[in-house]
Length: 590
Image (tube, one colour):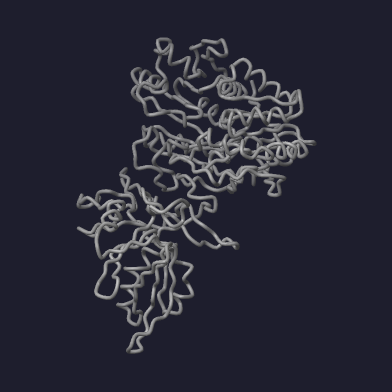
């Protein structure tokens, strides 16, 4: 039987990267491909060229069926082991199975497999009792040399972090143990659109109404509490009807519309505002059979609108979708791209996918995943080269109207080098806390020095002790100001004034006449205050520093002690996270 498909160049590259990895390594390999890139064909080709038997796992029956179909479209034959598809076949070279069914019938998989492929592998967790880990252990008992390949479009998940440690372009994603050590191939979304393998997205800025979720704080993992989302939506009763009215207008000439809601109650409200008989709702507890029927009706274009709450961001394929409406916030670049990715697949007569972002997420569709929750809505991913190793880091930062870099929040370089099989991390730190005992640079959140193991003073303890101590002043800093100061001998110095939120002020002075004085100013001021640490900053004159005042950030707190008639600065606290509020936060004083 002749093959119905020809692999695209990047699909061949992905397969080649896996093969190359296993020539020198035995650890699992990860491949990252955006939604719509054709992971099924990459899986099919890996199955075709494998020397031994292959088991392909997926978490839902739709993916089992899809991967099996693509493999047979290459002119091959494969078995299916999935209760959801009413098939339990274990013979032949390649078996496509659901992880639930396989893990319950491991006794039927006693024959040796040489390759294990996991689709949507971000679902693999570290727990020993999980279904995936049970299958892995069983396969390794029959063949210690079994190779494992994972494929996903989302290598970073809120609440989980990166699912691998090292990127093939030299970036450290995690220093913690992960199931996948190496990402051997990743394809940017922009490449697929530029090469016309995906449909362009047209993001509309001018909208009838929008939700303002900026008042809500996301959790440490970047997620939002559903009850808080629902409360905010309920407080803005007029917004949802205006939004859905506009969605219906934009959808007049569209084939398929997907709407992402903030909560179940919100989704039900949306469904009630859509045209009767043209819309359906899918949530987490929608019964399996009902869900299948609704999805099939949507794919067959019997209904136009499909509303969901966090359930159709992965593993869902409806190429005719040409309008995406986002009525929920996210702090994750990956999730933002996943939602829009539902509408980027190619389809006859489809020229674009319209994106209506009513939650003001404001991400760039092509932005890289930074790997940390977004600090605030003005932050965007920025590229920062390391002055030590040259690695290009992706950090959160801020840019000006013309795209010029204003500030970045990177802490440590993410670069690494592999020498003779050993991983060596770049140790350059952009922002750091200096150990008073040995002078080593530590992460700003460190509680113990990584070098001498000395305990570092907790910022809360510093503030608490300073507030209790007589002759000590603490100001909640709201800004800094630079000016020229002349002493009684007509000698000029740079005067730095720290303005407290409650009106207090503390000054410090720097002479900038000699190279030694400039080095001291850099060490004691620039390296902590500069908004772009790691970049070159020339210290020329007092006037230049005053002119470049916008390049310096103010600390959150300044601690000073009385020395005669004057106050001498003892400590400045930056990037504070603790029980006391900062000047940038709302609420009563602590």
